[in-house]
Amino acid sequence: MDPASAIALSGLTAASLKLAASASNLANADDKAPIGAPAPKRLDVQTTTATGGGVAAAVTVRSASVLAYDPASPLANPQGLLQAAEIDPILEISNQLQAGRAFAFSLKALEAQDEAEKTLLDLKT
Image 1 (cartoon, rainbow, N blue to C red):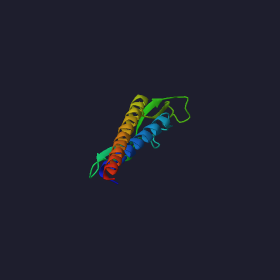
Image 2 (image 1 turned 135 degrees about the vertical axis):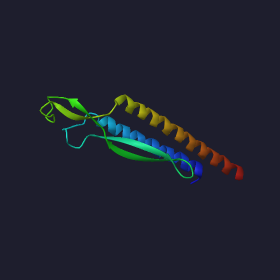
Image 3 (image 1 turned 135 degrees about the horizontal axis):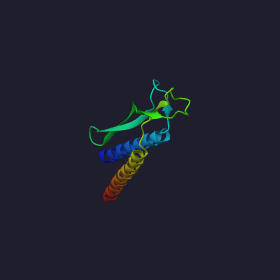
Image 4 (image 1 turned 90 degrees about the horizontal axis):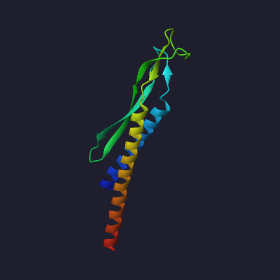
C-alpha cells in the first residue's frame, strides 16, 4: 500500500474508533453505581501522529462519575446519593459530528489517491 493510502486509511480507522467510543458513551450515559462500587466508565480516544505519517488511535477507559441525588434508586445510599456517569450528551454529539467529518475527509483523500493511481496507470499504457 502506498503511503498516501496508508495515511488516509489510518484517518478512517481513527474516525471510526472515535465514533464507536462516543456512541458507547451515549448509550451508557444513564449508568449508575452505588457509592464505593466501581464507578461508571467513559471511553476516550487518544490520537497521536504515526511514524511515517497518518494517525494512531487508541481507546482509553477512565472512571467518570459524579455524585447524584436519587433517593428512589435502589443503588442510592441512606442519604439518597449514588455515582452517576459523567457524560455530556452535547459533547458526545459534537464528537460524533467531528468523527463523521474526519471520516469523510479521509475517504476523500483515499478516493483522490485512487484516482491518481488510475491516471498514472492510464498514462503508462
